[in-house]
Image (tube, rainbow, N blue to C red; front, side, top):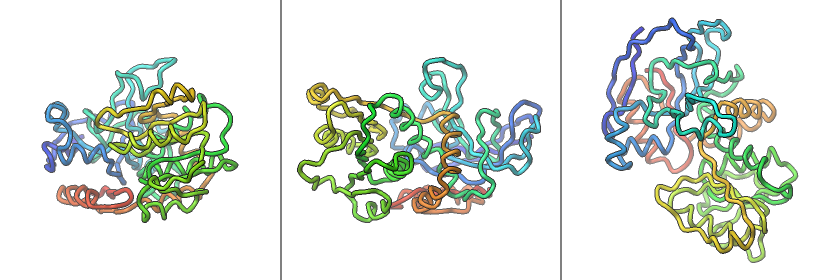
Length: 341
């Protein structure tokens, strides 16, 4: 069959390419239905990555956050029309120690490897996780972002000490919202404090125990563990504040991506015996755990719907550009493309 792939060929310019793909294989054919735009996609779209990176990776189909419906399963394990979330990480080997999302040999969609902006996506069974049939697909589209926080908390659970009376989350954006929400659901006896700077964003965090402005942290406030979701230049200031208020032997989970190195007060890291725990992306098991969390705590879907900022019906290439441009001007939430092209 001829599959149409919608690739970014240069900043702000998409083109259709055609690929001949056989359905006679062990891969499931998925029709994408809802795709969510990520900040990493925007860096390619706007050309804000380094020129040599753009030269190496473009042309490329963007988007690594998406859901769809089964069109054909050669094994007949999944019925036609089954709703699924697509796993963007594609490992080429298995390691008994290193998780699939940290293997240097793994491929990741929309990062040097075509993403989900295609008419059809061909995936192995282990790259698909079945969704509840009644799920809100606009919300389901951002599942990959939720799995990043789920993966982080899984690593935290294995490595942090057992005192978890108070958590602090730095960053009032989408990831900070998701991390705070998961903490309240998975650690209901713990106090969760969100540290941010923008009032209208912080107003969305109605479920946390306390809201603190980063320029007005109360004297004497302490936390047991922290999750840094600030990213960019804000990462340095967030880590600096966390080191000041965290209790000795606490764990600092680093999730915010910074394009440039940041300074860290290693003297106090050593003096307090702190653990800095980095997490990046996620694997198939994190997707399965996330869907399990959706089913255990169905109210999470309602909360997540508040961070869907824009929904754009995409029927032609011009609609893709419109969606990316609207996302750039959006001050809150995720932009979801309803993929009807």
